Image (cartoon, rainbow, N blue to C red):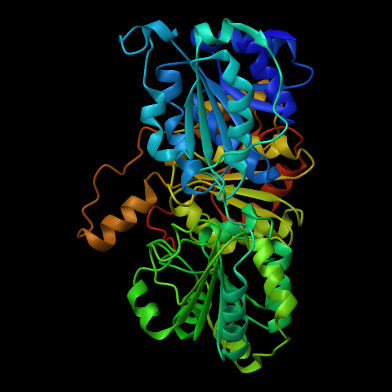
Length: 541
């Protein structure tokens, strides 16, 4: 059948099972939007307030569903506004297909109105990019793009389509399969390496599993838990691995790293075997990898061979899909017990206390997040922004079957609200809460309009301390307390701001108010904003 390029784009999305896209229109992408309008009963379009918000929303949608998220924007500033969202997804291995409009093919390179080399600009942050010059290539390109984005180590793929290409008529035929000679991601682990892993785990006295975000990408949560329970192996996680296993599981000891749990870092230092699963182990997780390399045998399981040995030398490298590899290990390994090792970590954990006390005229954020967890449904989703709020959330959010989402690798302020929108639209039945600071909230509060326009009932919690809290804390500890450029004195009254959008809101200044405030928030069937006044000198740990 004869279709133009824009029509083919929509047909390709339908073929891929896409039901939701996030975007912001403009002249160079209007042909696609016109066709999207004609198929509005099949593909829902969510108009965000900013293109970066569209990318983050698609990211949140992808994390919540495990499917490829889709966003689109026009050329020039529309496309470049997506780059931070693309980079955020890239660093956390989130599958996105990003569609941008471009100026006419014959005008490329002539610096015409709203021309930008987006394929070049985004190159460091995508798995692959396409500049479409022939409409006949669109079906193949879309088939490849979704395959590349969602397979191997997931990540964003960019498709840039000039306006004239969107108008060209061709015979449409969607490919049934993909064959890219240069792209053949590994799946099963090498049998020889599997044997080495089984032997190392069986011999270890103090084995430790470190969970990374790759566990979610391969949907390996159940196999991971099965291995830990079968062999009685304690577990810790990077920030990206939080919520892969229930936080209250007796074998789980929390997040490692400079902002992690003391017991988790103790386990990391004492282990004689470290099993890294889908974790790149960046500097925030392990600041001194050389020490671990000298004293600990390291098994590193990852779908991306480039990650193995990049930050920490692996004794036994194992390339492949975590879910398949864990099954291979489970098929060959015998049950085991490490009672003394687990008991010692449990004793260490129970001996560590956290200050959950009431503050004089502010909310204790650690106690608040713990209380919030207690009141949330067991499958709730918490989306943390970046800053002190991220650390409080990472360490004290705990629900049995829920998800913790955040920008881990890129550390993108302004992530939480749009990502929470995407997660809520992906699964409307789940309670979704965005937690942010007053600094990060002001990078994204325009998306409150999106919540209202599309009736997305997420809950937004703003930890207000009048500071860029994490920067202030770093200045206090490492720069002689020279606090500069961290004061947010011009901030609005956030409940009043929310009311301007017609969103119910409340502010609390004492932990004693939190119980009723959280109940009121969770009982609300619309978007809701809860402001918590936090001490400017409150520590992240």
